Image (cartoon, rainbow over all chains, first blue to last red; front, side, top):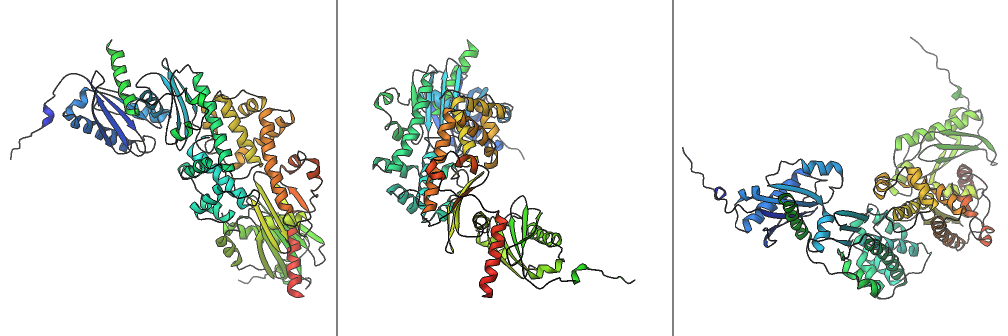
Length: 307
Length: 307
């Protein structure tokens, strides 16, 4: 029996280099394909890519995302060998995870690994220097200026993460516990937290929160920000303390020499709107996604080697 | 082959009831033997007794402590059957643990189970009604007045436990992280925490504190209280916030109708000395240990049944 192997992959359409920026995370992995001029050719999504929790799944997801993005742009998979890739991944600040990723026998022309914060920062500034303050479930501040990097906050809940969604929700729960203990009077914030969690006593609330992680407390942050708008005294106090920390982080970022500072993350818009007007004016709008930053970095690395 | 069993236990020296108060905890188990007049006959110590973590070890330790206390007072082990026992144990506020202890086929004349806080409170007031505020690694407030009980705080770290050793040390670490991030200037407190933990950067400190439990943070509380005495601004601010919470708890305890309030626990003396003079004057000295409270409760239960 003979078989005729038909493959599109034998056709390599061009010899020009391609650039793929990959933003990997615990829920999905996004890839962005650009040509040497920085033109967007295609975008694609694949499965989770967190090397600290599952290395095999991470490389599978990265490969899938890169194959899909080439396919969408009309290229054969063999073009992986012509592609220069930058991966921005959470967890690679841990040396062991960084080494494991570097040692991966990848099929690309070249591969560089950096942190998710680095590509998010580059993306937010269209591939150029700048600083970002992330306020989502957690809080982190990052700057990259003249090839030097700074990282502040990012201590993880409950040591740090002040001003984050997790911190706002957690502070709301602490205020509610004081009310249920009879130490402070109830307000609409504490009543709304009790309603949301279906609790009416200190013991209920403690049982409910056993094993709560950052994301669980983060679910309660909208209640705090909503009640802050209504003038609830606990919500106003909590928000003011969170904003005080965010202001200190923004000032610290300015001292790195970054000329553009961008706030990103799920709570960025809401919290930025509550900052003093003078500080709001010093913030810049976000220019691109983390994949944009990763693709820009891939081109930059390539040019540095070629020139 | 025949064997002659010789036993002291066949001699039961008296038919009067005996009373044993047991204070069980995660590190050891203490027993106190009293006669019907409340006279101390003997005291003894045995191994750990935390029914929530190890039920078999708990009943072994309780039995050992009770046998030892009888032996020390010159009684045979058979007198266990004449002994009315009250056990004060951590963890029995959980219904499952409480049921398991109640169902134990014990060798005593009678056995009652209550919480560690209940016997600590009774002991602190010489077996009578009153309130206690515990500040050790954690914070808890308890009152028993006219057979009614109140429990405040005791939420566990990091939800509650403000003013406790764990909370003071944790706040010290948070202040140090801000300094290492360049958000705030260093002080003697933050320098002493860095020296103690052998760290000099934000990343070092975060790595060092990964997996820290309440007791680990509690180890740093003496540094905070020491620096508060020297006027260190962070130490003064942290201590003032902790004391504010402690004052609110003391006021709440006064509203239960308790006429005596006692502060106990590893940090009680140091923190009480920092309270406003008027509040210090409302505190009473501790009268006895938790075992004293447990033995008093054993006599009380016996009298209530007999009369």
